[in-house]
Length: 141
Image (cartoon, rainbow, N blue to C red; front, side, top):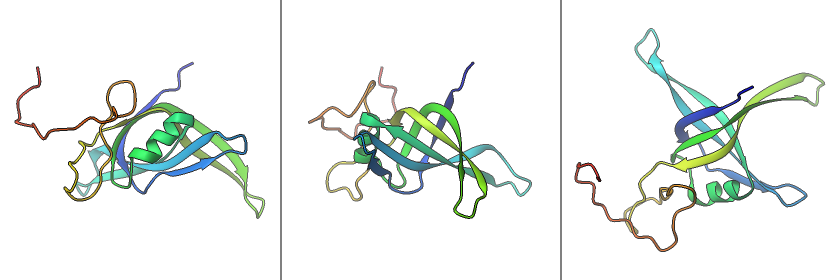
């Protein structure tokens, strides 16, 4: 069986970091993802998808992402059921992220709002790395 989800979108609010009673970090956020087609009015519709990640990935996401940040999420779909206070059964679909990639370019200090640093392959941004604005439109190879 295969259960793989890959999404690219923007965070609708700041990530929410909490800890379980056993001390495991869990971070939740909502990702706004545009549909790849337009409706009858010619507009793109957007899906708002709940995402959660755990442990080190959760702490990294809460530290470097914020409302409006662009991110790529790879994980699995999870459906869970619960009962409301008035006794109704509810089902919730959410993505449990295994990896979250930061897609925004980092901004230089003093350049306005803080934006999440871009992640390097395999993990968090390298400490002490300075990013130059060298986007001259040419391929980097």
